[in-house]
Length: 85
Image 1 (cartoon, rainbow, N blue to C red):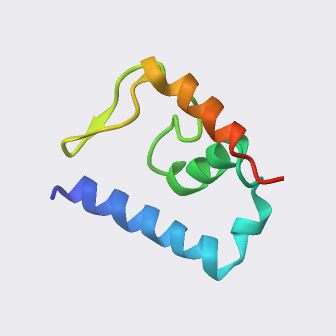
Image 2: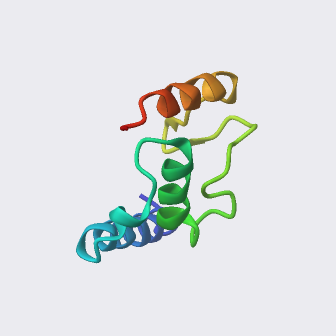
Image 3: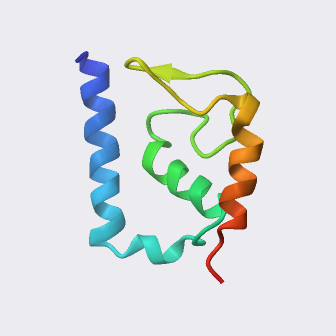
């Protein structure tokens, strides 16, 4: 693991812990892309300038490919359809 990857992991895990310790999850809209996007932005805004936005290019890190833009809109629509009412 590179130093950059360790730093990214440390930042995102610290932010994830804060979501629970500070009851921040209650401040995000549950079961929607809007809420998922806000959580992604919170976790990764210090790491990636695109955090919380819809990607239009393929992204991979550490051999893991993130959701392809080709299928992203369909996946996000399904997330919004699962919304807890």
